[in-house]
Length: 91
Image (tube, rainbow, N blue to C red; front, side, top):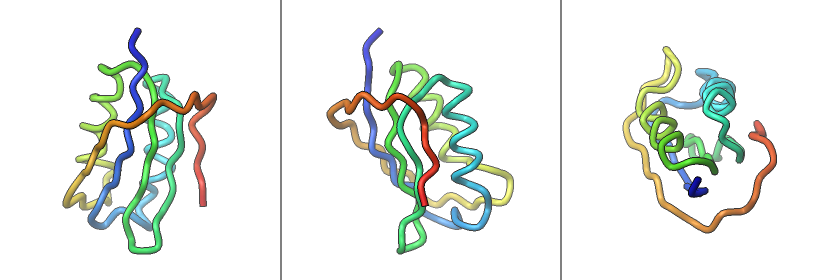
C-alpha cells in the first residue's frame, strides 16, 4: 500500500454545517488519518493520509460535504507524509 498525504482546502459555505464532524466520520470510515479544522477566513482545512484510492474517495466526498454545505472549491495538494495515528477534529 502506498501511503499518500494531501493538504485539502474546502471553500464555500463549509462552517456551521457540521463539515468537520462529517469529514472526521468519512475519514474514519475510509481508514484515513490526519485532522480537520476551521480556518479564520471561513474555509475548512484538512490534512489526510492513507491509501491513494481511499484518499481519492475522501476528496470526492469533500466536493459534496454534509447536507447543508455549499462547496464552491476544493484544493488538494499532495505533500510529505507525517505518520498521523488518528483523524482529529481540531478547533
